[in-house]
Image 1: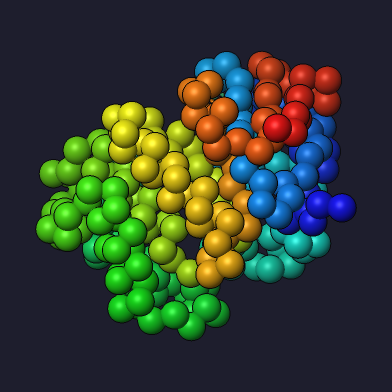
Image 2: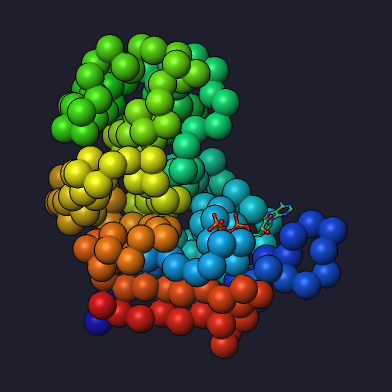
Length: 235
Ligand SMILES: Nc1ncnc2c1ncn2[C@@H]1O[C@H](COP(=O)(O)OP(=O)(O)OP(=O)(O)O)[C@@H](O)[C@H]1O
């Protein structure tokens, strides 16, 4: 019997000021060890779905992490556990290093009792496997390339303590094929490592090859999806 990490029941999201839901009455589980690929045409609501899962959007329905809702955890703590990683950091001030330290010191993260030095060491070590040199950590976000920003923000998300489910929004869209495969391998390894808190990944990709390489299950959304327009297939 698979162990459910995240359960989603009757999830409905309506864009503010619009009448028709973007998707309605969606139900599925994310189990321990799952790498759930989210597929679907542009604009069908994949990013919006991830934002609902991390409680960044207001939705109808019930989402539980290990049997408890975001309200029961407290929303800031819940978001550290179900962690949304955007495609690229949008207009962040400062450097990746200052951002990592700021986010590490958020009150909601103090529950994890890891030192800032450990988080920095983990992030720099991980990113070095992705061809990110230490100097890039102290460059302004505005001076970094799209691919550098993407790898740095991924290293930050993965190295901060506490994430149980990572929600990855096209995590390698700005990377060349060999670098993309290296990042993929690290993410899959982290999901299966007993030393990591990460138990499952939910991963948006437009690449059939990437979906084939990493996915254990695929959730396909159709435009205006309701129960009949969502297909969850186990690999
Ligand atoms: N808060 C909002 N206000 C207005 N429109 C929104 C809002 N949130 C989502 N949308 C709209 O909902 C639709 C779905 O957006 P979303 O980013 O979830 O799609 P997607 O499937 O991830 O697309 P893509 O594959 O192109 O990244 C889009 O038409 C978007 O403009």
